[in-house]
Length: 272
Image (cartoon, rainbow, N blue to C red):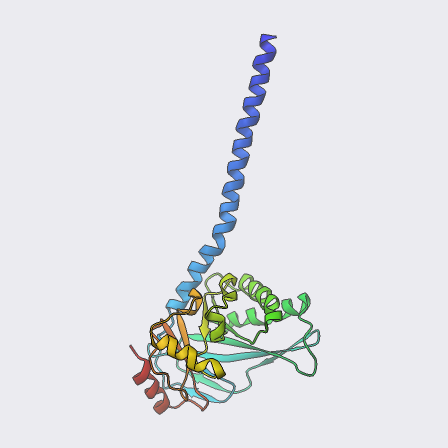
């Protein structure tokens, strides 16, 4: 009996130790899985730090920006437009010439346009196809950030959330991912906080009826409730703000083609 008791105790002790080892292994494994996104996020945020303070948006028109030196500004250029039509994703590359100086940091922008005549299905297949098209922009020369420009109704947020998750997974770990954002998304409507992005750029122009309230609040010292919206600001040359945004990066839209004169005015207004 005594020998049996010793063996039984040994079996129980072995089971307990084995269980502890297994649990520890599971905890470590889970820790690695949970920490990986945070590490990736930290690495990709370094890419944003390589961008100059001022970044010019270059939309779909001929742009000759070779007068800009690499330390003066970056260029966020429309690289591709995706049209969501029914079940399809119709991809149109940039068709207009863009001339920049060597070494200038580039942000490749993908604009997503739903179709009014053929409402998008917003299916998983459509989402995966769009994510693939966007992730391909990371292969362009001198691109350090991929940016997605889209409008999303409340009912479409699940689709765009999944889209951004797939884009993030397909991008290199060192590539930053940003989006443009309605100011209302940043102020009390924080669906952005769970997205796997490095920045959300609040568009502080073309804001419609919300403009006066949002601009006056920011001018008085208010901040956006979403942390992702506090790093960058989106402004326009034809809508002067009563203050200069105190953010790390300022993206500037120009409804007209850029020129040395219009760029100099941006420097005078927003250069640190």
